[in-house]
Structure formats: structure tokens, C-alpha cells
Length: 224
View (cartoon, rainbow, N blue to C red):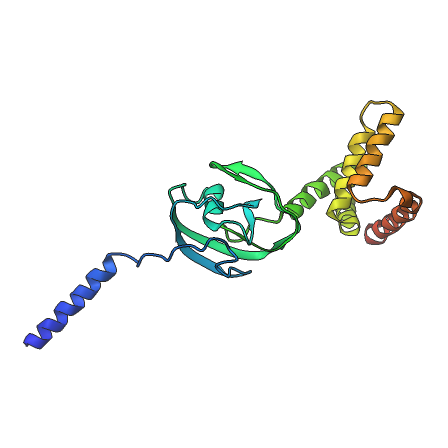
């Protein structure tokens, strides 16, 4: 009887231990890379006060970014720290800078791994930019009097053919062409845009052929 009572007592102690809550989480690694955080992997850990590591990106961060600093930047914990759930992701071609919650993140180019604090992760900046540019192309198409169905097809075909940077270049050129300025200034502005986007001015004669290829791709996908 006494043994049975002792067993019940031990069981009650076990239940009380469970009610006290989960065990303390391990301290977060300095960065996503340090925690071996890769795509489709989740890391749950605890941040103390942010250690003031570099942070690259906004909402989606490079794998070598300070994990706790990024969590403060993203607004998921205060500067004093807290529990964090981080999600690993594939790399992005670029990462955007911003200042949030007292943390200034830096811009970065292509990096092979990323992480964030939402599931699914925020889109890569270039994907978000492509969406904006594709929508703008569709609006420009409809302004030419084409119907919405054709314009949706055309904008997607253009974006797929020339890529996000090409769409951005077209929009920048379009903006320059609508400015009221003298021809020499306009030519200089367009030359700078082309140069900034990696277009060698010596290759300009071949651009006519490139335009023809793009036009043919659109016609093939959407009709004339």
C-alpha cells in the first residue's frame, strides 16, 4: 500500500514538473550559418541582448547575418532579447538595406543562403521587384488599348524573356524619355542608365536584334 502511495506521489511530482513549462531554450548562434540553418530547416532558440553583429537584408537576411540582431530588426523580439523561431531559405540575388527598431541593416549582393522569421519566408527582393515591374508593364500595355488578358500575357512574357533587371531598365528608360529636357541631356541620362546596367555602349547596334527576339517571343506566347 505504501509503495502504491509513493508511486502516486512520484507521478504527481512529474505532472507538476510538466505544468512548470518547457525547458529553457538554448542560446541562439551568432548567425544563421553558425547554427547550420539551411533551406527548409527551423531553428528555435533564445536571444539575450543583441550582440551588435552586422545584418544584411530586410525581412529576409543573408545566412551570415547576426541572428539576434536580425530578429530585433524584424520586430520579433525587443532589444533586450526573447525566444526566436528562425526559418532557413535558399539564397537571393540581392538583399535590401533598411533601418528598423534601432537596427540598421546593410544591402548585399548575391548570397547562397538566407533566413527569416516568417513561414513562408518573405520573397527575395528581386522577386518582389519583378512583380512590381510586371504589373507596371501590364498597365502600360492596357494604356495602348490592349485588353487585360493580352496584357497579362505580354507582361509575363516580357519579364520572362528579359529578366527583372531588363524590366527595371526598360522602366528607367521609359521614365527618362518622359522627362522634359534637352536632347543632349536625355542622351547622357540614357547612356548612364545603360552603363549602370552593364550594357556596353559598343554593343548598341546589336540591341535592335535583341528587341526583335523579345518581340517574337511575345507574339509566340500571346499572339500579335
